[in-house]
Length: 153
Image 1 (cartoon, one colour):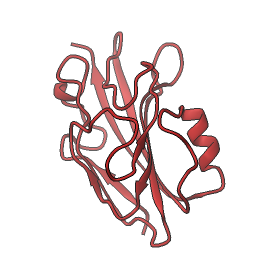
Image 2: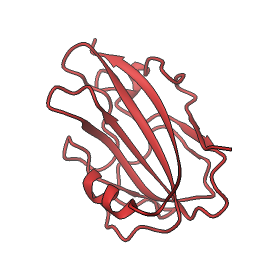
Image 3: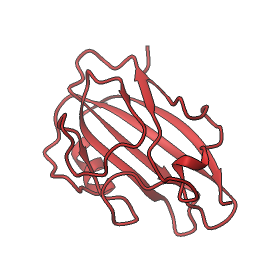
Image 4: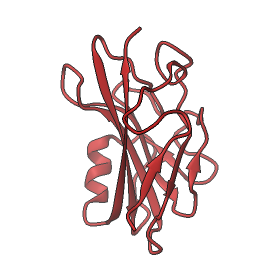
C-alpha cells in the first residue's frame, strides 16, 4: 500500500486555514501519514508553491525525520535541528523552518511532498531544496503528496 499524507487542518485540495498563512499566525499545520515502508529509516518533507510568479517557491523543508514518527503537530519550532533529530532546511524566505502561504494575488496551490528514505541524509541544518533533492537521489522508497490552496486576503 502506498504512503498517505493528510492534515487535520484541511482536506486534500482544500483551502489552507488563515492560521497557517502570512495573514494569520503563520504556523505549520498538523500533518499525519501512514503506510511508510518497513525498511524506511527517515522521512523528508518539501512544501512548495508551483504557482509563484517567479517559479516554484519553497515554503518548508524537513529531513532526517525518524521513520517511526507518524505525525507533526502544528506550530513546529523554527529551529535547524529538533529534539528528535529532525532537521529543517532554508525556505525561499531565507528562514529556517515553516513559512506559510503568502501569494501576491490569485489562488495558489501548496504541495506537501513526503518522501520515505532508506537512509539518514548527510546534510547540516539549513539545507536548500536543491541540496535535499540531490541527497535523496537513489534513496527514495516511496512518496506521498497532499495539496492545499490559498488566496491572499
